[in-house]
Length: 315
View (cartoon, rainbow, N blue to C red):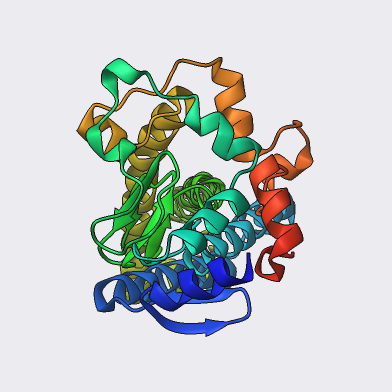
């Protein structure tokens, strides 16, 4: 197991490794990750400093901050965790390859072995080694050209997390999409509520014979050029976040319930059909609980066995 871990980690294309934190060395991905955090920081600033909810909307503020916090944590775990890389072992070392293959046999791996319909199996699934990195490939593992490693249950390499959406990061990625969508919806609601409030204040001020003074916040912030720009930009960012995340979320949920990755769709590799709820449990955990909605590793057989033998997976 130690041989497998050392050789596998040596082949993954990393810019930084510090304990459980792994940063893939890809300029495009790093730029997209930075941009994502800047947008989340902008959402926080707009909702807490500019369009601050009133005391009556304290619950809305708490929901927004909770969703934003969980979105950031989910993204960080998806971006900076090992997605499930397979060890890179040389072809001319059958002893080491056999040892690694035995060490990697867990409940999920054996389940994957039985998942495929032989009639629809791609030729690559029958290979013992990857042609790119010499990894001993378990079933449903694919090579990522950005990470330069084979990854278990690889769906795709996402530049927005600069990592593969795969066996050990898929839950975090789905949670990130869910919480980011919630942030977009609640943030959009906060801005529109403030805008509606100030419009009513303006109508009341113009229609009143006594010229009732409007709320100072409306006159000093919302009715200024900078306030209008903030409101427009906030709505635009919220709409872009919402549309982008809901499209990706629908795609991920469709893939999840069918237990079929994007790469398997492209290659027309068909795992055997299993109950939908079983496919969901395979990603979020074997026992439905509050942990399903938290960015922690699912209690699947694979992750439990991995954490016992590898301290990188400890929470």
